[in-house]
Amino acid sequence: MIAKKSTIWTKAHTRSPLKIYFLIMSLVGVIGTLITFGILIFSIGKQVIITDNEYIAGDRYYEIENCKYNDYDGKEWTKATPAEITKCEEDKKVMLVQSRKVIFKEDVLGWAIWGILFLALLLIHYPRFMKFTKKD
Image (cartoon, rainbow, N blue to C red):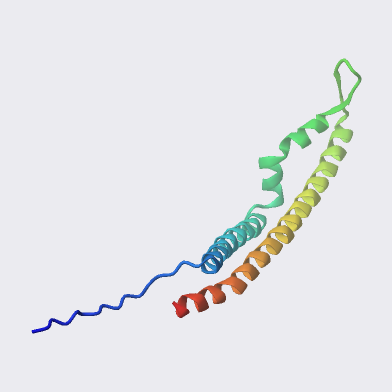
């Protein structure tokens, strides 16, 4: 009696450099998109939730405190008059609010661009990665 050898077909997993490239670029696209859109949402939330007065009181109050001193002549600070202090504080508040708006717009613009770039990276590489995976 002749015994038959059984043939077992196993699927061979190939790791071609191109497949690994598409995998890495897809992962970078997913992670980058999540991080950038997370930062973007955080920036928008911070702008909406924290009021201008809270921002000034929390982060930049020292600039308004500096209004109490008028001039430095090289030896000491001289006191300002109450009218000068009030005008300086109002001007500083306006400047700080404008500065906050500029920083917010720069953050939104910058992180939105990075988010779009990572999303494009994902949308270009992920379908090609899936095509290589289906072939195997």
